[in-house]
Image 1 (cartoon, one colour):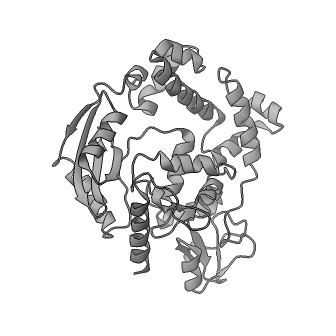
Image 2 (image 1 turned 60 degrees about the vertical axis):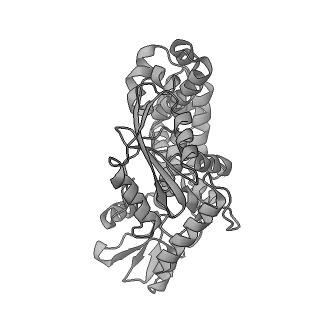
Image 3 (image 1 turned 180 degrees about the horizontal axis):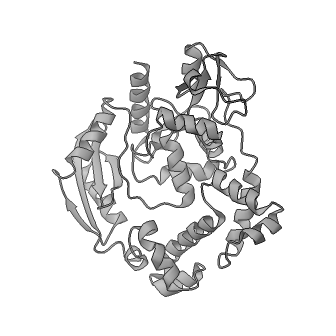
Length: 353
């Protein structure tokens, strides 16, 4: 995800896009009040608006919290979430059926327009795109179990091979048969370098970074990469990845606060929404698993959010270390709890400075 520039924040405010509640607040100089992006109040003139990553900075600048949208509190759940959840259950129950807006709206009691808008606001997808993503998830699971394309695609709800192959490269990064065999022929370059937290491994395909790992042992890091892509053409490339490694090391050393690097990661629609929410957490700040679940419009999915954090394959670039338990304790971390604590302490110290 690209950095939220001032102009992009302004467009979000104009659209009252509640998906960005918690990502920043805006203050109005003429009133001295700050609000969350989705606040229903009358929009001010652009020249009167200042943006802040967190409420504390707005208050330090002399603004007081809006009593209407209460920006200092956790974002309220989107009222459209129950409607979308009901429609998703209908789609999941009949994966082979087309995700017809007319049928879904009749079953959920909403108009087609209301249902489509709710899906796009809550999930960032249309019902058909959600159906396709769920089918792909099932297809990938079936591939791992059956190891053959034809039985897997029919058990996943596809009516023919053409429908899955036409989307395969965009969503899997490879054909289904290639994915099922552990990515044979896919070229992956990697390098391992020392960093302030031990050893850093960066691996890339031709499309972007596919893995960023932290550890203490280079052989263990390499073994993890080969286990994830057992049939890929994996080679070590120290010089070709020097720029990417340098950017991540500068981030770890606190010389830069943003990592905007190209990624090539496989994920479900839900995982992508969680990871996008993680990349919106300001440097030096944390959010709880529950806050992330609310931010993506799934307030009851706290455990699923935790699983999405635990399966994040690109440490630091997707900053899952910024998600903590509700009581403020660090919680778990795929690359070691001590590394998570060290990361948070470094970021918070740098942010204060």
